[in-house]
Length: 124
Image 1 (cartoon, rainbow, N blue to C red):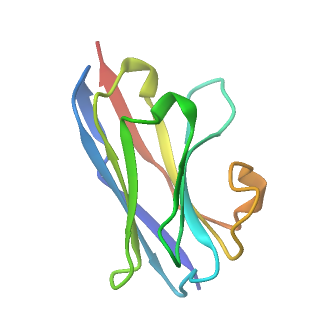
Image 2 (cartoon, rainbow, N blue to C red):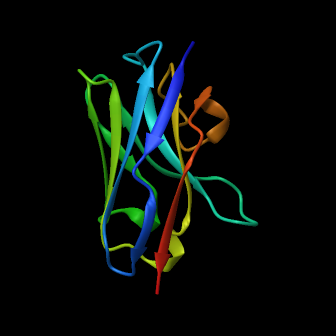
């Protein structure tokens, strides 16, 4: 049984930083990748960042590029999202996701496995 367990969310002030973690168990995604999505109330779940597991190539959505960094620890089967210069508009529930094949990575329907989500709130 595959499980993705997120941690690290919380409340932070405008301009602050947080690091999210997502530990995967049950299988590895060596041929695919993992990603972070986020969802705010009344909005659709949107792509934030992704990483190709085998070589570590990273991809980012425009609004977070230069502020967020996705990385992975192969030995721990864990993916991270380091978030800096946080803004109130980054407030959302952040979800970790995993896919067995790495293509069309911004499309949430490509991801079979999802975590339960972790709340990130940025106060102004």
